[in-house]
Image 1 (cartoon, rainbow, N blue to C red):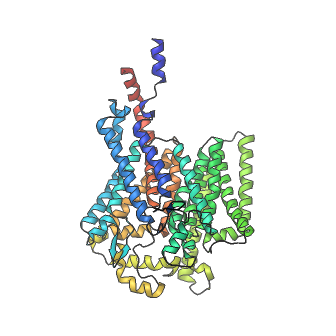
Image 2: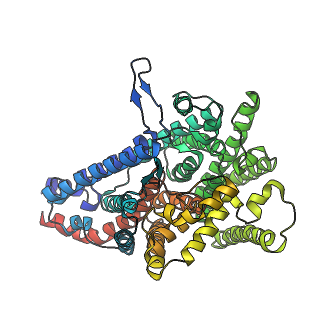
Image 3: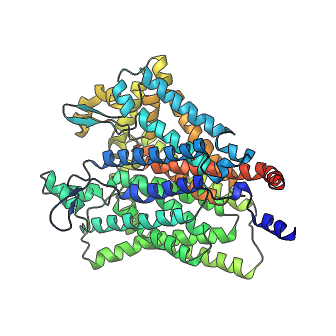
Length: 568
């Protein structure tokens, strides 16, 4: 009797068991975090190294898009087959906890369904149904669209339900992500110094019959152009920093911190202002989030110190190499060159050291609530001051010469490499929509047609013959799937983010997932949704909701699980 009781005690509760369902989901995530970012178009050759990346960047979006669809379909089919055939251990057990894979619809679940239904309605009534379904068309041998059609939206919903029902946290998933992110970052840094170890850039340059260095300025690593890469950085780097704060083992901390060094350098090399917007939002929000816990705040500030120090290290490397790197002009480059960065590094180092003393020599393990309130107020005022400055120079002082800063501080059609023009004309077009189109849009990824009346002016003023994106994800959704689509999308992503912050007290890993969502949603104000970075974003949105469900399942199933074990 005593032996049987001891055996029963060793049996884990159902909601804690790592089953085949969880394994498949986590292996899927490993593939998404490792193979997917590295995957580019390649061909086999007869001479060493026997592969070629010719036209790799020209087709990179398509290759990653189809790769994402295939691996997602395989993962979903595998999980469905497990449930249907009851091939996994937990699927065979007649316990209510196993049924949580299908039941317990949450508010976020309903928002996802509403989003997909809105996209479907928008597609069904679209004048451009082919483009609305696939997210891409060919006009006069030119491709338009970014593949963000109904098909991709359905796959995003499938990813969401797959992860929220099947994920179980294992750190090897994120160690793998960090390792591959480090490879991607270091490739970008090498590309910035005109070093092309894989030959991707050179193959692309030769295949497009161009002898200039434009491709070294616009394209890099295995991701694509700089705006695509900046989106990827905004998803991956906050997660890596947050994992450094979360993890306990020294060697894992060393891995995350090492990759943080490379990621910070890559953020400068990518030469995009959007990366500052995303990482800046992450830094402000998570400084407040960690501010009540001295240990976590110390780790976070140490990571920020390393980030800024890495930027300065890149400057020293460039000077030692004769400053032989690609032309840079965005805000990250200015941060690298600014002497103020040195003062920021010193201040962060001092505060980090002080926090180390506090946690080591005193018994303080939690700061007063006034600390996050004060920091949140300070950051909020800083954001308002920035917005106020733009409003001032846009509406009041319209004549002062701002030099290079005008593209940031004075809103106009030319603002942000003529994003202002695209936003203004997009909203102008939306005002002219019928009531139905205002509600449901013109169809997913159909902005090319909506914006076509402005192509001539766009070409005359800014030299672009056409565009198929508003360069603002939220405006894009507004025009393509209407106000219902935009609201359901914001509800879906926003409610998942709120769920993660609420779950963080019992499940600290939730903050890791939330960090990617915060940074991506901030940079999305000036960037484009693409099946390169956006799938990673959707994964972390899903993980945010999964972190909430893991707590609910464990709380709700504790009593049921004990009853089940007694029946056994």
